[in-house]
Structures are given as structure tokens and as C-alpha cells.
Image 1: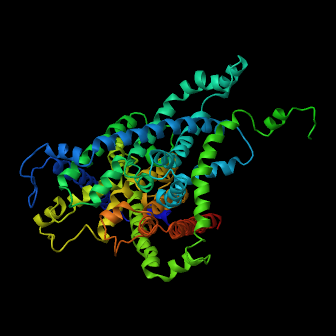
Image 2 (image 1 turned 45 degrees about the horizontal axis):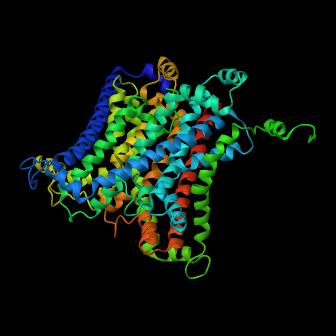
Image 3 (image 1 turned 135 degrees about the vertical axis):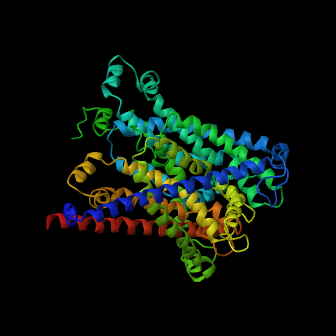
Amino acid sequence: MTDTHADSLPRRSITLNSAFAKLWVITIWTLLIFFVINLFGIIGAVLTSSFATRWLRSWVPDGLTLKWYFSAWSEFQLGDVLITTFQVVGAVVVLSGLIGVPAAYAMARREFPFKKLVMLIFLLPLLVPPITYGIPLATVLYQTGFGGTLVGVILANLVPTVPFVILVMIPFVEQIDPRIESAARVFGAGTFRLFVTVLVPLLMPGVLAALLLVLVRTIAMFELTFLTAGPTSQTLVVALYYAVFAAGVRAVQSIDAMAVIYMVLTMIWLVIALRFVNPTQIVTRGKQARG
Amino acid sequence: MSDASIPLSVRLKAQGLDGVTLLVLPAALLLLALFVYPFSYGFILSFRPKDGSWLGNYTKFFSDPFLYDTIKTTLAIALPVTIMNLLAAIPVAFRVRLMRHQRLITTILVLPITLGTVLVAEGMLNYFGPQGWFIRTLTLFGLGSASSIKLVHNYWGVFLSLVITGFPFTFLLTLSYVSGIDVALENAAATLGARAAARFRLIFLPLLAPGLAITFCLSFVQAYSVFPSAVLLGAPAGPTRVISIAAYEAAFEQYDYSLASAIAMIMGFTQLAVVIVVLMSRNLFYRGPAAGAKG
């Protein structure tokens, strides 16, 4: 109401306003650039350190070497850790696809009693932070004998990924014309054939996007794996945590070499994932899936 | 209604229960077993402490300052970080919304989220450490020195790590809400002579309020459950002994799963309390503009 008097304001206040607006824009850009510079500094520091022969009290290391990668590989048993990581991630991706996609289809196409309650159960694991439900979950897994095993780690990781796949896939299913399915049914296709020959090909872009995001999230999922993994079922990110936690035992460069290996592993899949999804989708849990 | 001549499958189908609906079962059962059951089990377990009294864990938590102070410590980190991230995210999102190279910025900002807190912690130990590039740059410009500024292994280490991973999260969520608003509304207001500040206050803010409230809740809940960076970048024995550390220690150092479950429940309920307060104040906030328009 007060702003409708804009035309009656003296000219000088308008120039003042536009100067203020320019200052405001510059401030925002400065803050954003400052943030990005520091972000690159953090990543760059790890990268530089992993190649450094000796790096104390100077801007740049004394020399460059590759030896830390070899020592990290043997010190942290990275071969075994990577195999475990691939096993966990592979199993989680395949299982959450197999369980999540059909569930998303049912959620998108059918109205059934208690559907809202089922939806709430799918939403909660994405809203409650992993460390909160991870501790009771780890307790149950340890009491049933799954704690500390590869199976336990995979089960724990499915808790956020299955709902994630479901929520990403529901809008994808909804945009498929139901008449296509009806046509397939008329020609005698059962639910299984309908899935294999009609739905999966049509849903492929969505499935691919959802599963790539699951893959990136599972590689980086620290809390749940940390709480449920035993010495032989650690993934790379948990091994990295223990290495940083026990810093001082090993050379910093060795830990950084491991961090770089982790970083490369995550980035490869992130780059692939970003070909299919918008970066905002990684945090908005599929709400923008129509894009 | 239950006419015997209608087969059961047809009657079920009328309720929406058929072969396709059954596809939801594996996922629902999985989450019942791995989410709902553990949570309920933990809830019950928390009332069965080692000493036998059913409220023993909770009286222990709220009488031992070493335990109940963790709530205060966690709030003292999580609340300022979340508010700061959100206040910074809104103007940046409004700028980036108009950009052509939006995707470049969002891709850069999604990096710390995907790399995760553990890697960011290791990087920050290098970068913000006493010999790191950040302190060196400050010293170079005479803004401070390694002896006067300490940015890791204290409150600020955890704070900064939550800014590095939390700001992009808050920003990307805010951006998705901001870009969901029809540009025509803003153009209409601009045509009627509303300046940027007025457009923000009168058009965007009311429309954004639900989204911002949800963004705040999600960001807060994430910051409240901070764990790896509180250990690696903070002082986990003192100033940054957050509630998740207390829960972790109870479970995996004292093997007192009952107490650990109680702490996890307290953690969950404090998060819930803040979320409820925010969502309720959003309703209060909403009433204002609506009444103003009528008057």
C-alpha cells in the first residue's frame, strides 16, 4: 500500500535506490564467489596434498610424487575396501530399483485403503536424518546377527534409497498414458509382461536417473554404513572417516590420496548422473522430475 | 454388499486391491521391517534401562549435564547455521534464477553435497588448518595470523563445515521453490510500479513461505544430526559434543543400547519440536497478509 506512491518520490531517491540495488547485487555475487573459491580451495588442498612430497609451512609443496597413492593402497587395504564398496553399491542400486520401481507404479496407478499411511512410511526415511533412525536400526541389525556384515550394510542402505526411487518414479509413471497399458492388457499381457515389454522401456530415462542418484548417494552415505559396518564390510567413505579420525598414525598425504580416490569415484558417477538429471533434483528428491 | 455370487477378487478390486497393488508390498514390508519396526523397538527399548525403572534413561539424560547439555550444544550450532544459510540462500537464489549459466552454478554447488561431510572435513583440516591456504591468505593481507585465528578443532570448524555442505543444500532447495513461481506475477507487480523490495515482500514472500518453512526444517534437521564433522573438525569432548555423539558413545562405546535408543528418541523429538514450531509459525505468518488484503 505504501509502495504505490513510487511516482511521487523525488528523482534523487530513485538514483540512490538504483545505486543501492547495484551494491546489493555486487554483495551477493561477492559472497557467492567467495564461497565457491573456498570450496575449490578445500578440494584443491586435498588434491595438492595427495601429490606432495613434503608440505609444511609453505604455500605449495616442496615436490610432487605419486608414492602416496601406492602407500595408501596398501596401508588402507583399498583393494578390499573398493570391492566391498562396489558390492554394497551394486546390490543397493539393483535392489532399490527392483523393489522401488514396481512400488512406484502401484502408488501412481492405484487407490487403495491406507495409501496415505503407506506414503507417509515412504516419506519419513527421507525426512528423518540417518543418524536418528540409524542407531535403533543398528541395534536391531546387531541383535538379529546382520550387524557388521555386508548384508546388514546393504539392508541399512536400502532404507533411504527405496523411498527415494519411489518418490522419483511416481511422477514418471503418472506421465505415461494409461491407455497404452490398457492396450497391452487387451492384447493379453499380464502384469509381468506389461512391465518388461511396455513400462520398463518407457520408464527407462526415469529409472536411469533415479538409480544413478541412488548410486551417488550410496557411495557417499556415511552414517548408516558407519553404524552398521564391521571391519570387513566398510565402504570407502567409512574407511576414509576412520583414517581421518586416527590422523597422526599415517601420513596426511596418504589419507589425502585415499580422499582423492574417493573423490574421483564419486565425481565420475556424479558427472554421468548430471547428464540425465538437474542438479537441483539431487536435493529436492524428485519433485522436479518433470523437468 | 457381501454378495456370495461376486468373487472375492472382484470385490477386492473394487477396493483398489489387485495384482498391481500388491507390487507395493515388497517396499512397504521392507520399510516396516527396517524403519518402522526398529523405531518402535528403539522406543520401547528406551523404557527398559539397565537399572530396571522404566524412565531410568530419561531421568539419567536430563539429570546429567554431560548428557543434557548436548541438546544446548547442538542447538547452538544448528540454529545459527540454518538461519544464516537460509538468509544467504534467498537473495542468491533470486539472482541465480535470472542467470543464463544457472546450471554451472548449481553443478558447482552440488559438489560438496555429493562429496559428503567426511571429505569436506578432511579438506577443511588442510585448507582452514594453521598452515592452510586460508589462514595464509589472511596473514598475507594482515587480517590475522595462525596464532590468533583458529578455525578447526573447535566450534567454528563444525560451523564452517555445516556452511560448506548446508548452504548448497539450502540454496538448491530454495532455488527449486523460487523458480516454481510464475514470472508473470512478478511482471504484473512491476508493471504496477512495485520496486524489487516491494515485489519480494508482497509477491514472493507470501508465495514462498511454505517452501521456505520446509527448506528451513529440512536444513535444520540435517544440521541438528551433524556427526562426522563434529568429531573430525570440532572438539568432540567439549564444545562440539553434539547429541549424535552422545548417542553413538552410548551405543558403541558403552554398549548400552537402551540409553542409546533413548538419546536417539530425544534427538528425534527435539527435531520434531523445532519442525512443529516452524510449521505453526508459518500458519501465524500467513494470517497477516490475508487479513491485510481484506481490510
